[in-house]
Amino acid sequence: MKRILLPLLVIGVLLMSACEVSSQTTVPEAEAPPTEQTTPEAETPPSETLKIAVFNDCKTDIVDTQVLINDELAKHIPIYNGYWADFGSYEVTNDYKVTIKVIRYHASGEKGTETEKTVIASGSSNMGFWVNEKAISIKGYPEVVLELVPAKIPEAIAVTPGERPEDVIPVSVSGFKFVEKSEYVKGIFEGEEYWAYSFFQPRADSKFQGKVDSLEIRVHKFKNETSAREAASAYAQEGTTIQVDGINVTLNYDEDFGEAAVSWQHGNLVILSDAIPPFEATTFDEQVLKDAVIEGVRATVQRLQP
Image (cartoon, rainbow, N blue to C red):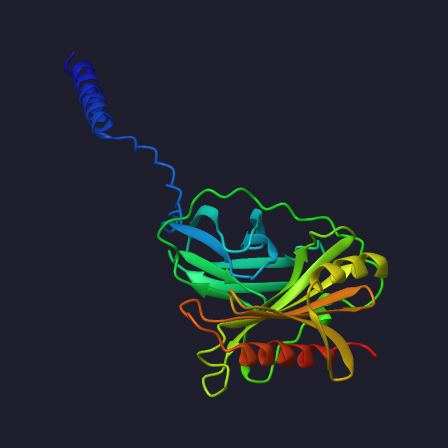
């Protein structure tokens, strides 16, 4: 009996030990999958506001203006002379490019020169562009820009062949300094196409200083010589015919206002040289005023075709 119980006891002890070992054994936890590495997004640079305005500083021309930002058209406005145009506000970042393209149109509708300017800028820098007959320049942005009615580009006017007033008007007269000129003014006479003028004031060292306020030379172009002759006869009423550099002209003098004028016809052109005294003058130097218009004639004759 003792021999049977002893083996059973040994087997029981071994089974208990195996259970204890089994209860102490731990199953390793599953490893977590590796976390994906994410690249931080690049920060968007802050934007700033850019304002653009354009001023037409031409004497008479309309400027057909386009503004591009980074080569994309921002706005297109034709502008009358003497006016600002608001080209709007834009959000810009870092370096950017502003391009202005301009086409000048004369009042006659004739297309003039084309000009372009590009500016590379950074940050907010409001731009005021000035456009004239010579160039495009950048000046300060205006304090006030009113809403502008876009200019209407005139249709080109058919002009008869022959000398053009803008080629005949002088820009230099002895004893005077050049002030300005206009190459196109719409005609007012029957049969008149258009006219041009140049404007002068006396030089300080000339005999005209203090006795002549200004000298104006006008050249009117007509469709034919008949229309020109009728207009010339209207200017020549009560005048005196004199000869200047081999050309017969009509000289008029108004004693009440001290105004002297010379007129004559050249083909389908009618040309006038007109001088007035200073506005504050109470007496007039008739001979000096007449000499002034005669100098205007001489300067014009040199520009006429024979």
